[in-house]
Length: 302
Image (cartoon, rainbow, N blue to C red; front, side):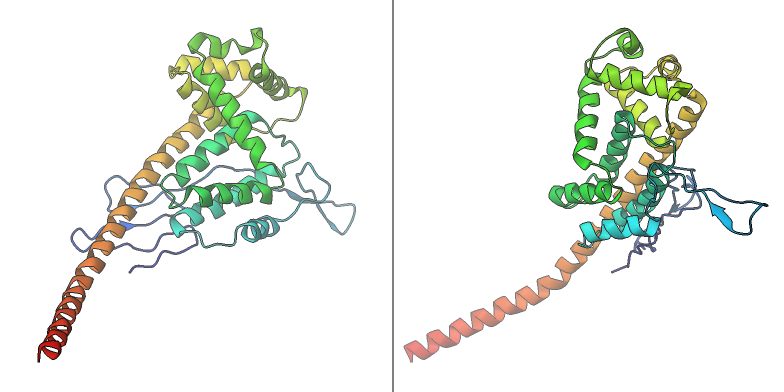
């Protein structure tokens, strides 16, 4: 059976009849005219800055974080592995490891502040990634370990994401963008985001936030481009950035679907091969058992 690596790259999954390959790469997207499936997961471009001062000889490291002594990426990854020590299939683990590195960089930016739209975006991406995971219980445990490793509350993520989903289902194209004129818990969330994004507080835009906006539009059945433009304006968010990041998200979903389909084909084919190999063995066992019964009968009757 072909091996699957754990470094955000699938090893070749060779099909005997079609010779297809399934490869996840962090450097390029899937090419439609190739038998090699590739995609890049890029959910953050925020990094910790390092600068030097001419007045002193030491290097000053400025860690972008909301806490005085943020953990390193390695510590966050180690916390995740400690919290969930069971093996994770590489098709999921490779992406999870890349995600946690990128989200660590978001989490410990100085301007970072948790908000429910960000939570909805992450929950949406996570659930899409883990769709089809062998065990729902394990998937939930992995989610909790992941968020806890970032020193945040996994229950808050789920609860807030559910609140926004329920709210969005009750909206339409008009009411969705007129949140500022109404009162309510979710409306309060959105007003707070708009205020902070407008320069009156900490706000750090990310692609998870863009996915959260997309999910709101999707559930409200308000997919017209003009609605997204008006919602971004109401939230003081750059629509061009949102458009760009939603394109990345849509491509990611498409590549995930194709990758899982190819992997499923591979697993089904290997399962069928194993069954075919065991059939002669079962037949021999049946014959041996039958012959043994015949001998027993002969002994009794003789």
